[in-house]
Length: 140
Length: 140
Image (cartoon, rainbow over all chains, first blue to last red; front, side, top):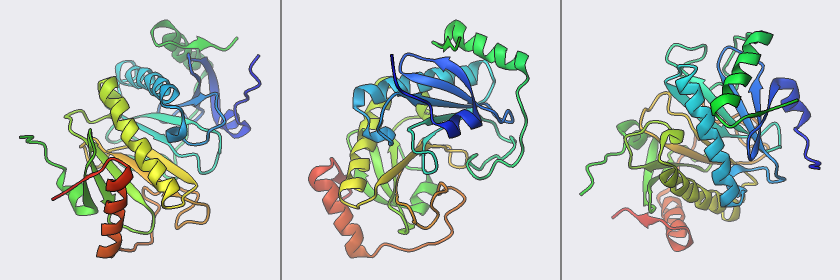
């Protein structure tokens, strides 16, 4: 049994979608943009301090999410970042963007003013799509 | 001969340090924070659209820069991001951060108000250090 726990701030900010092979997959509660967060089970706080093999696996899973965002959610652009100045647990943002979106062309962090929520059917749909072809194992 | 050219906006914003194996290495002219930018020679605009082998090489070089920032420049934290909403040429930010720095805890993009410049001797020193142990081949 893993004793790893997702940071409470991330649980507050996000819906838990489930697990990928290396990462916990979350979806930011702000539905204005498709904003995914991947969390590998590690005590390292910086992506670039990970063992390269694990780092590459995390990037593979971020790539799957990015393709999902482009193919299924029709975003032409994806922003990816590991920042973690506020929440020390290592987490990787994968965010679908399109020209004219709610804070284009600025990055979302500290700039996204609008908010919206996901309906339960929409959350279920996103989880189901990610489970089907993109490597997600959903939470019970 | 490569016909690849670094985007003019990045040349305007940054000093060119030289080449690593896969990427052009640049240093943002704003010296308030150590802000490196890596540019692989590709027509892709998103990091997660790169062939995984090239993506992993880019991440290896970002890791070297991150270790340099932590070991030589004494930053405890590194932010890494590929955004590119404004400049479409794929570029990866590797930025040294420390609590209390000029825009802590916010990310730099759209939040860093202070500015400073590098002296020529300091630029020379950074290039020399990166060439010595971190894989940089300096510009002629």
